[in-house]
Length: 61
Image (cartoon, rainbow, N blue to C red; front, top):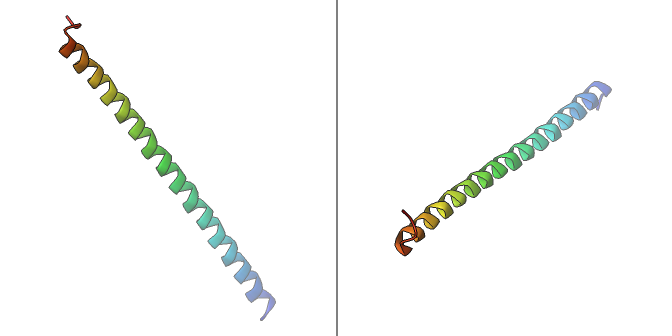
């Protein structure tokens, strides 16, 4: 294998590794974003349930 082909192969391997790391980073970001959204939804539901409990107990105005 010639020196140019070896450099080209290394360059391609580095690019593949870089793309793989970027993909993993994006995947982690999307997972985190999904978890944040779920946390927000849970908090909203919790507030709604608290409000319903107050209505049912007769404590609200």
